[in-house]
Length: 426
Image 1 (cartoon, rainbow, N blue to C red):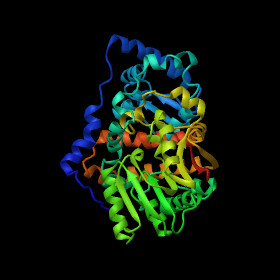
Image 2 (tube, rainbow, N blue to C red; image 1 turned 135 degrees about the vertical axis):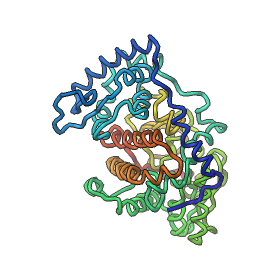
Image 3 (cartoon, rainbow, N blue to C red; image 1 turned 60 degrees about the horizontal axis):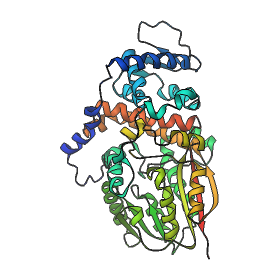
Image 4 (cartoon, helix red, strand yellow; image 1 turned 135 degrees about the horizontal axis):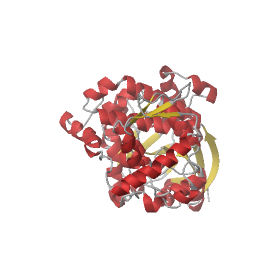
């Protein structure tokens, strides 16, 4: 499947996608990093001994593996120096550098995710902000920075996403009907599960004929198309030029251009009045300090009695608070400026803005399966992805991202929810 790639010729695409490889730092080699590395090794091996995994150090390691997933550390000095100096950023960069691998990457990561609050002793957690990097100011989600943050991920290449997503080009959790169905779902069922997820969200927002819909975060247009097919008029806003171009083309091809408008616009600058506001996994890119503004904007734009239906990735509230402003591997390489909220934080911000919380639906295990299908598809399509100009470091980076995310949902550390809010009629 080939999709339009507006202003990114192949030479520029190659430069953009190879940037992570060129920017990947060498393992630190200072005396301080050596001491930190030694301490990290003691802590890591103490933790790993209690987990249902095997850690070995290459072909000469003779320890019994059994049926447990195996993490093979081929360059332990570099591996522990990176972790000791940069924490989870170092873990991801070490994988990108090929300093460790796994026969079952998700299987290795899940036990760590299940114990994420206790892996690091409380005394060291309190020193997190002193020892580890903090978020750069130029990644804060101000009006000036947000478009750049979004572009770094979503404008990589429409062709890249088309090669590992299903035909709907929906880049968010599917809904397979039940956890049991999610567990056995196959690739061929993914597109139908994505459409079912969108329909559930539109039902939450009571979208039908004549409904004025605002979509915050366009994606590649599937939700706007399905809303318009119900007879709604849709205004969708995005900061991704690539996504906007593709969504507009799909609207034209479906003869729905008269019902769908897609603007390259920050959500804070939207005007008008809408019966329903829908948003799919966009709030994670808003930033914690801007959640009040986000919900105030939604409240301002909704007509009295209007509904907001939001799909969001969530984490436990205590973990959200303890990890706030921590600069992570995901921030550095995948989603700059992002912050996963808790359900409590969203409900509080919405209530402060004058929105009434009305309903919630949780389906985190469906995201674990969605990510597994994406990861398998990405790996199977790698030769075609490489032909787009993406290199081996990008491959390892993207594989780690998908597996790391899948492990978070499989461990139930992360969840995904549909939330509905209502604006008072008064």
